[in-house]
Length: 151
Image 1: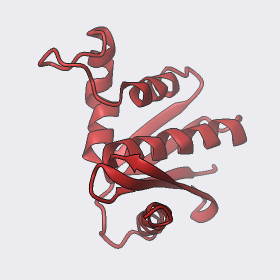
Image 2 (image 1 turned 90 degrees about the vertical axis):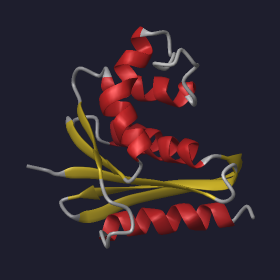
Image 3 (image 1 turned 180 degrees about the horizontal axis):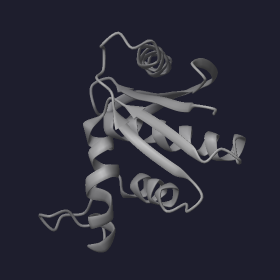
Image 4 (image 1 turned 180 degrees about the vertical axis):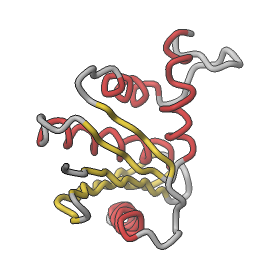
């Protein structure tokens, strides 16, 4: 059985400020693809979300016959949003429990599209950042480097 994982990370200087996102696709414990991009003015949360969205987009388009994917993020905001909050936000018209508009709505709506895919089993799991995981360290470095290209 093929094991495909996506490791993601976002970085932002000054928050808001120059930022970057990155992901790497790992298949059977080998990095088979990486991507990163810098943004002139953004937030860390946006970069974290973009890393996941871009990683899933790459996966869906390049591995259409693979149905199981695990995404690892060190962002509690992204992991909790995907696994716990997003469905309620949708039901409530993208308002938080405090009846305030959900920040970064367009990125959460993109993630909802992936979550709704009936033929894909997408899990987003929390990984501790800066804990020595090879792939998490790689995407951290790529995201920081991408953000520095703009400073």
